[in-house]
Image (cartoon, rainbow, N blue to C red):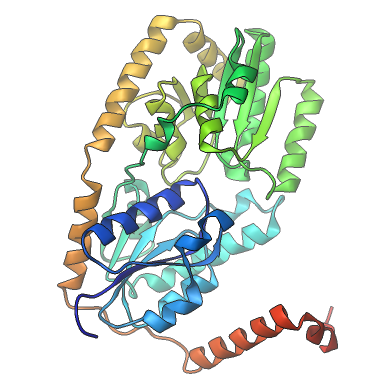
Length: 400
């Protein structure tokens, strides 16, 4: 290879509007501004972002032992295993893996992926030149897993997408004299949406009948869990719980701007960007003190460690009924946002890149002798599956 090494990124999936997606695109902007050739290689991608990415299998064509690969690891994948096998230097950027038990009863495939991802992660301890957690919580997790060289690449969310005008139709629906309690995030097991519903039920029945719960986030991928949640809502006789699904930025802004309280019951977070978004939009935050949440909140907002619904409802009421307390909470949250945004993400990233490229590289990755033959065979099968799916009908049935 001649000239400056390239610094590419690889990850299992690039989603539209999620925290990892924003970070990946932000990293690419920093690298390109610094003069690096930098592409994003993915296994799956939201159609709205497809033009910004390349298929992970194309990574082989640009791979070089002098290049640096920033490997975003959040779940096991074919993209991950391919990244392991190429000769490029590697920095792992770890977004944490949710413990599989949160999905065991509602999404077996996801539970298996999380289990395999956690197991697969161990293989990278001596493969990468540096392992970066996107929070101190995640860095400590890497260290506990046996990674010898760890550091923090802080999440500094780009919040400018929240400065645009709100969607007027959404705002008109919920901008009234009712109290709006909001949660933003995927409707998935570790977020403990069932606890949010129980907390809201207690608050709604004991303290404020003119209140509603707005759950903003995709639920279409987790049908069994969503079905259990809607059954719980029906059982409790609640008529003011709204699952609004995936939203545009303008709609998200409307939900934030009509919110009176951001309530979070999640039990596993690697960072939790919506907490910071709520800080920025000046919404008092009440959150369960689990995993990375206290670190992300950085002394601001209100944390609780007791999930008794009566206790949480009393905290909700104490905040929502005291305008002076709300003002103090919001003021401290804005200071936390200032501290976060003062972190030099660009400079930190480029220092890590320069550090890796100027240091002796790790040894070549250990891969099975027939890895690339297996890769070629897989490619051929995928081509047949895409172009001639009827050919698979001739295969014998799998044993029971």
